[in-house]
Image (cartoon, rainbow, N blue to C red; front, side):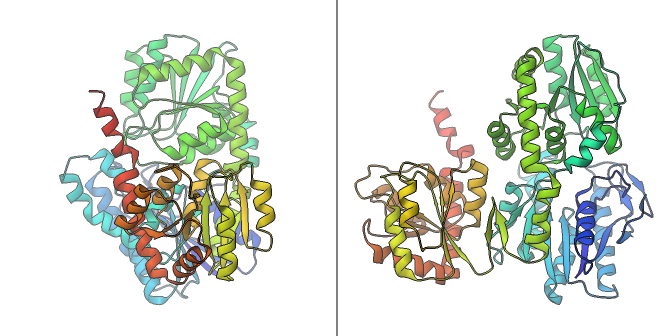
Length: 584
């Protein structure tokens, strides 16, 4: 298979380079002699703002550097022009390549290059796979946020992004949040693949065993930050929190550089805190230094578009507790699920100081959370396991995986999430599925409860998968993979609008409902987002399942209405303001 990997923001291709696309290329070549791989990247390296002409090490695949003018600042007109020129040069190269590739695997962003390549692949019928690394223009709008004007200025970028997303034959991303954004405009793909950026733990551990570049006193507590020093990261809040504590034993270790480096240095001096700014390190040096630290801080700024990013993998791999101000539900849930640190209020130095004090004083808690952090790394961030999903589920065009479940091409998934108890009539669904006789239908049951064993027995002989109770972010991922959802509440139930209604709507799937609640039935009818059935009618339920399974147009239309309903009526970011208003 001839595979072209396009990524504008690759690193230096050195032996210690931990770049996602370099790792994927190595895996593809290593695992199959039939795979011919080429990485197409930029002659301009974004992280150092310098040009390069060749990789720093030899690799068993071709690396092509496409000419790009470059730029000095992360947010400037010259950068957008530079990306535009690179994109034009990329499509020229792809069009005149000796052979048309079988697969183009394309990192997004940037936007111009991927957009032109997406159109080319669509025309030439080349499989086009996207890997969403960040959300543009959303990330830029956080920096340049002028009401109305920003929307107008960034509208062309949104058009480019949507043009890429809708043409993808397969969607993968570094977080579920990014997958959902791409899926919103794509009518070809029913399911997506989320693989965190991650790191290879065996390599990380080898580097972590090296001597760190700083010496640590026995009584010190080191607070680590790794990453860019720019507007997306609220380092001043971290410094303010340390100043509030006024604890000479706590030392801030900052690994990275960026446009605000000197500003942060000066601020730390003015606030009289202990801080070491060591600059951008080679990956092996960063691994050893962050592993020598006691606590990691993830101070992402308010309204930032980031979800799961590089530093999350490195913090988890180092086995240290984390303090995070990030507002992303996906990462906050991960911290809570693994109990590997504390979530703080964004831009609240007092809250940050309070959590920092707890961890700096309580060594036992710090170590326990650090162990949990390492467990998270092993289960969610280790590339040796997770990157197989990119290779197997996307590049080889096999069934896609969701929390251990494989969805094969042509399958229809009917989803249920909730308690397995007397309030929910799962046996009615089983009988409707038996009558439907759809060979491609699978019923995915997420949840547990007192009747689970009985329900498993009743479902024998049917294509029913019982996942047990899933962590919330995994449940969301499986719901997104489903095509239809079912709400089989018994007739005598007094329930009205409940949690699963919000999750079903947010997933953007049509709902089949047996609940008698007039409020919910009217919502389904008014929003045109599903089908109401009789609470005890197997035939009604069967007809609804068959009807939606066989009519993809209706399924998508109702799914779009369902998502629209979620955004207007279930999104807490908007609706909970009404509760706050009652306090004033």
